[in-house]
Image (cartoon, rainbow, N blue to C red; front, side, top):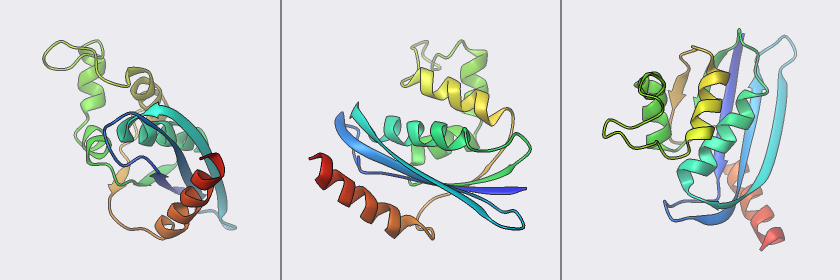
Length: 144
């Protein structure tokens, strides 16, 4: 079964700040199933916020699902597409320079939840982008 995951966060930089991340999980069944969730993130970078969104979205997928992930984050996209997760796992979750990778716990969770699946990764615009952005803006006003 094909499952589409759409992720968006209100954090746009690598500076730590508070924000909101949201996602939509859409399973392509006879009657499509859609799940949406938003959550606050505290003192997070864009990479961390997007990883938290991905981790929480993956929880709502089945192991047999073929995944399409829509995400506007070149670092997270590259790590999945180029199997950096496998390299990091093999190297004890350290970079090529021997330093612990940033957001290690989130990456480890994503690795477990992907369970060897090689999702298709899409960046740029998608069908939920504007809706997610407007919801993030609305919720950001609510939480200050």
